[in-house]
Length: 139
Image 1 (cartoon, helix red, strand yellow):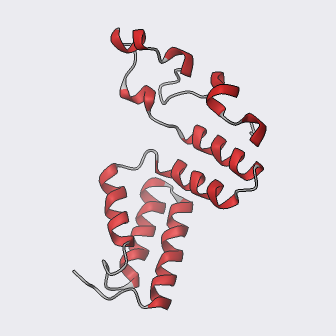
Image 2 (cartoon, one colour):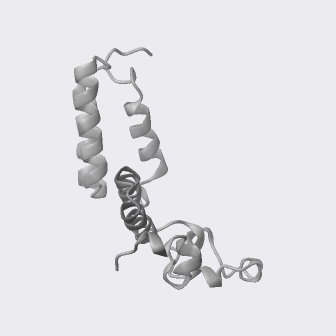
């Protein structure tokens, strides 16, 4: 299904279609359900589907860059936090001394996590860092 800007906000206009990782709809995420132990943190986590829906809305609203950010975020949902933070650290200017370190991170994202858009983003950053001379190890 494709969403448009008329569907925004999804939580109000398409609430039945917005589900947590275990398949619970928004209407099922009540205080009573939490108190009764029927809702876990997994029910509250955003899903790739929700992020893709937000990307559709952004694109429909003329915000293609925001849409690409949502699509990249969708790839990161199941990537372990420590891996995300390691890549974040590598992407900070002056943190790596050569392009190869970023290319290895891109390869890892593509191979281990099937995060093609994230890998392409890291590869693009590697090229930009090389062009701008940002591989000067500062720390």
